Amino acid sequence: MGARALAPAPASARVRLHMQKRNIQDVHITRTGKPILKVQGGRSSLGGHTATVFGATGFLGRYIVNRLARSGCTVVVPYREEMTKRHLKPTGDLGRIVFLEYDLRNTQSIEESVRHSDVVYNLVGRDYPTKNFSFEDVHVDGAERIAEAVAKYDVDRFIHVSSYNASEDSPSEFFRTKGWGERVVRSIFPETTIVRPAPMFGFEDRLLHRLAGVTNITSNHMQEKYWPVHVIDVGMALERMLYDDNTASQTFELYGPKQYSTAEIAELVNREIVRKRRHINVPKFLLKPVAYYMNKFLWWPTLSADQVEREFIDQQIDPTAKTFKDLGIEPVDISTLTFHYLQGYRPSQYYDLPPATERERREEKKYLHVLDDQ
Image (cartoon, rainbow, N blue to C red; front, side):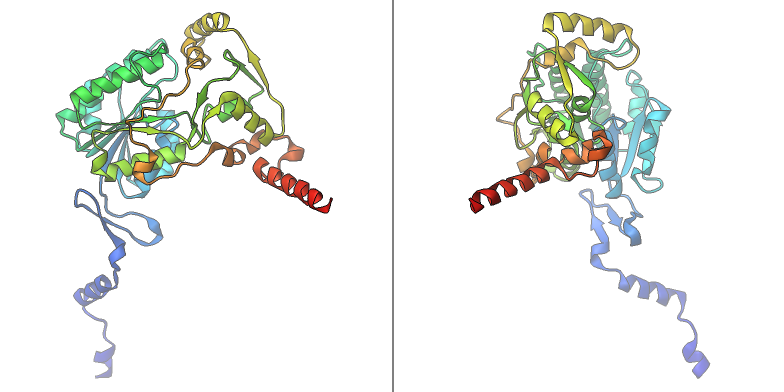
């Protein structure tokens, strides 16, 4: 009797016992009704959505890929160059990130990337033209091919990331082709969600790091005004759009809580890095043609003529567009995060100083204390 009492339970009983211990919060149901089972350690064992992210190797791409992969999605990453995708491999569990080589001019490779997906993100964009791709090639023709593939395979959601100031009437070719691309994708796939992020800042940005460099050549005395936005906030917004069907067919303007000029941001940068950087102003009629030929004949990224033109265009907000507020997100101000992104530019003797905002608060307290004593 004793030996029979100590005998192990049948396998079926052990399975039932194990299933009874599972908590209801361990299973999540996605919009499509597919379950995501969370196991110990936060790893995801079953997938929900399958998302294709074009342009994932860029600045914004790594943040949305990471958010989707860690929430249990299978993420398809089309890429052009082998070395540009390495940093995306550890952003999700094993098998969550699927890489497919593609060409923006090859319709078949684009279709292969989207045929099994239920959401497609288009983050493809060029900040400057090259000998292989013009602004129109990328922002219009490329976006058109992706939208056609999305429509052909009846993908549930298409989220197209455009740019602030996107308008077909803009004097900037970049903004002009971005506006043109918006019209094209909406004509092909009317349910497209269009996203217009403001200039973004983060670890790999072209805003704070450019101003923290040794020299910075400008043409408008850094008077361009815009609402800089944190790239992590934009990534969070893109993820929430996937789970909110009310965002389909909508246009979103994603911008930060405060307007700055480039000169004001340069002051923030100087205070944070405890250095005074030089900013050389060159008249537009001189800098624009020089930038054009430098961009045309040099094979590494450099200032383009269109970037010079954009320095004279302030950010305009579309009052009819939805914002972070409609997604339940409160964006952070750039002044609260400069320490995290710029500490490496400090001289060694000031490296361990607290953030500039904290130092300013301490100095203000000292000043008020002296006034109280008087």
